[in-house]
Length: 288
Figure 1 (cartoon, helix red, strand yellow):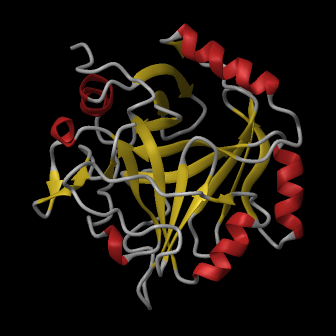
Figure 2 (cartoon, rainbow, N blue to C red):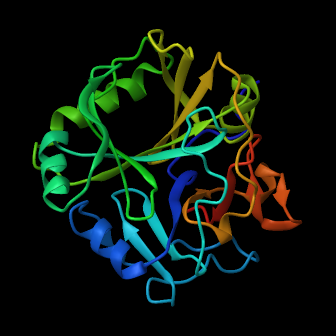
């Protein structure tokens, strides 16, 4: 089925929301060794749907500029935890948030100097990119990446070439830029029917991780300024966390620029609270 609306700068990923226990500590981390910047202004909600949870100066909320898309840090209630998020790639839902940098080793050295411990890497991964994984002060899984992917199958030559050109132009000392959010899903066809066919996100390419005993594949979709990484596994997956992201730490939701009528699937009857087929919470902002 063809997309209902072509992907454009008006539609796509706007931000990722992260719950934190200590805003000042998290701001020191995200704006310090990681290198993000305070945003000039938050995105606007769609007409008639009310607020998104605060301007940059609102109590308990800070918006950070990650280049093309934003990071929304929200102070969680006292005693909040990761709320059912197991940290296992086989659990459906949001896995991690990734940033492109000029040189992973340089950025990793800066992070290590600030006391950050890496859970993986830096190393050259499948697809010929350099990656490293680590956690923020509350345990949110983050990735830094440099280079461009060499896909096992390319579905959109134009987007793949654009990615390669951007990597070639990025100097080694370049700071972080919002790159992707990764999700694990139960069924690829169902996910593509939602993000590609309904929302119009273009499929860039695919990587097959044949050496991994879980037998997983990643499909990459261009979602406006950022990429959605879709993980599918031959091994059975487990249910996602319960849909109560406002009460927990870590990756809570993805903000999308779109028309409310095209998404469907509200949470709790609130049209501002939407979910994809695997229960990933989505929040709408106005298309521009």
